[in-house]
Image 1: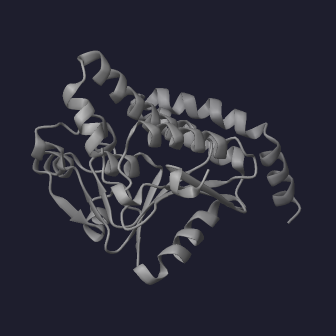
Image 2: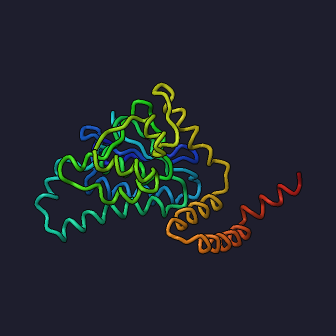
Length: 255
């Protein structure tokens, strides 16, 4: 199948899997096929023991503009049950990203809007080109940024999150960084090289340690303080028994 007919492109460069949304003529808008293919690509990359990090980006000028016209038409004509099933599919994508063993980085060029902004924020980290734009314009068409709200509330302050989801305004990458939505902003001319450097930080780190850390980090979201500490005890003990930890301690002791 020609690349032009694939909704998602995958390229592995050493320890980094690059997954690119490939609907540039539709600004990489989300539809059923793209969501399904993205899930498959993420699972496949995570299942490769040589992969230490996944980078999700968009082909063409934009990262992802949210739902496309055909998806919106489908929503407007669907039954309650059909709309629930459709929404759950996107929810499963957001949950999947957090369940993967390796870190997932959204590399945002151009616009990340609505569900596309939700997809970016669902990733473990976000890096952006300085000219990138972020926003949740759903309210402008009478829609609710419902699922992404759970992600946004964990990324920004309550007041900032409320402003973003109720006004539908777009914000620049620098402002998104100040709000806590973006980890780092890179200049356009250096973007690809900086993204690669950012992702390569995981290359020599323990895959098992990062995986255990990621799992505990998100599990602790819903835990009381003492429960989070107790879960930390369990993960601490588990980490001590891994081969990576045993080798790391032995190497440290030889210094």
